[in-house]
Image (cartoon, rainbow, N blue to C red; front, side, top):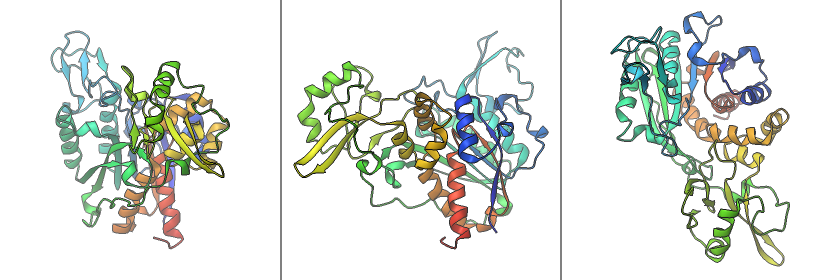
Length: 373
């Protein structure tokens, strides 16, 4: 029988911890907290699968693009922590100082630290597509080589949610490592999904007859009214008003929505409803429930999180998460290629938001046990 259990998760955001506990029916004591303070050799319970999606801020085009580098506060030397043989008691390779300024995205080195210690059956790592850009490819290649040198085969691919059944323009790198002694070489990434659901399929009935949501900022609302006819008749996938600033936050989803972001609770969509009088249009912000749906979470899972978290936290959780449907398709292909990997799975999950990878795995195992894979 295929089965799984979430043994540990790592999260420092108090609301994300509450949501994880509710959604996955675990206890707060399973939270490792700050991953940089965890010593993998001291984990009390055995684990054999590792999930992770370290913060992408420093790799993202919307972030500061500082990458995964550490900077010595004493001598100013900048270096990639992945070049160190070990991060235990890490010091500056130039002056030996322990006073190091570490970017959030350098947490990937802590993911690797756990990885090389527990040597899981397989591991999945997710991050922004910019990780493969010219600016950061050296760090990615270094990371990949270190994983391979631990005795693993590596597979990775850019995957955009809109190509895999979810109408969101969210391109991410999915990185899969399989231990060589367990790999039969049959895994392939899933084919793209041909039929994309409508944005409207993810939206609730509007609660107001107002054409343009009153809660949209006055600045962007003015641009929407200026370009209203063009928006309502646009054949674009995403409409971008002629704003002079903040274009990332001011896009309007038509055929699919812009990538949800943790820092932006104002993702805007054009909703179209057929009525007896003809089509009615609404330009409005996503609700937290709808944001959860665009990340692949069920309404039941949303309600569990909403019972313990404020709306602002729910938006942030959606923007920080991994799209459940995309990860599900990858894990489904892995199961079809190597079903023996899914026997007695014990997970340690690091920085995966509110556990999208765990939900993806649960869906695959439930289907496998029901005989539908």
